[in-house]
Length: 463
Image (tube, rainbow, N blue to C red; front, side, top):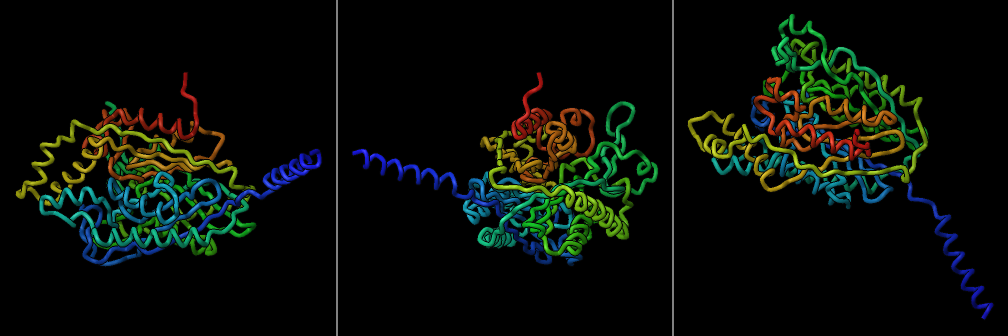
């Protein structure tokens, strides 16, 4: 009997020892990249500008699949103006199936170039009910791009490489970003600097509230970089609207860095740049596009060199993925369903306001159905990658960094594009294009999102 008990104990000890000594699953990343340039003749910028007549430079989808801690995580950046509502759902669901994960572990973000297409299948269906189907974007091309991206994600997951180190750094970008909203003495928006500005007096005014830093995170296998993620908050337009497809100066800056470090895929994310653009430093002339690109690329390069000094070992056990579901309050004072339906079906109106009504109705109906938006945060060592919806004001990005000063917080906005501009509570009383005309969220959105950020970053509420 004693011999039997001893034998059983020996087997149990051996099994426990094997579990304790078994190596943990390594952190791995796989990258993907594909063309996302629409056919000539396609609508651009949700039909707000001329349709595509030529290609100045191609558009792309780029991303990374991260494996090793729970189900896979997919981060994806698209050179389109925006992906919203059911369009956003379709992207996340397709990429999740391809990576064998769940949609809440997929973050899709646009860089918001205006000489690029959008994607919102619900808005298109609403527009089609008034005879305007396919006028917002090339629907078949959008669906094909989703499927091609899903195939690329599947291949990336299958070929993922082990990661041993994480590098991170940041650097100032000079003479690119400036705040669009300039207040008068009464505290209301008096001047606006859009992506370009020809008024020298307005351009001479201070930069205003921006985040001047380009942040960079890179995954390494030993000394070999596998991919580089960069984050910078600004509208990415130099000039646009003449029918020439372009990834604009952010795409050109990314290309310059890709050429400088060709062994690693470069993936760029637009931060919370809803109220930030290049207007102070851009007169709208074509010559400024490469100049702005070089300025941004210089900031990316300096962040890269700093990251090389901040290369730390990393493992899958350090990775955390957090999500928070939020219901953004619709702006009911401007989203009058009866009026929107009347505008949509009014054939005497120009096409643009009718299509705008379709997009507004899409967001309103999502809210009425109780839809919630997923905010997410990837925590990995000293880095936090935060994923947010809409044309978010830069104040949210600055607030997130202040909430978590011990880490480098990188924010990607322009996730679900359905809500449009998302201002701060105060901004709605200040007037201006963003919050008086085109935001689809109510001023109470600030409280919802700030609470969501605190929960994502695990920050205790202030007393």
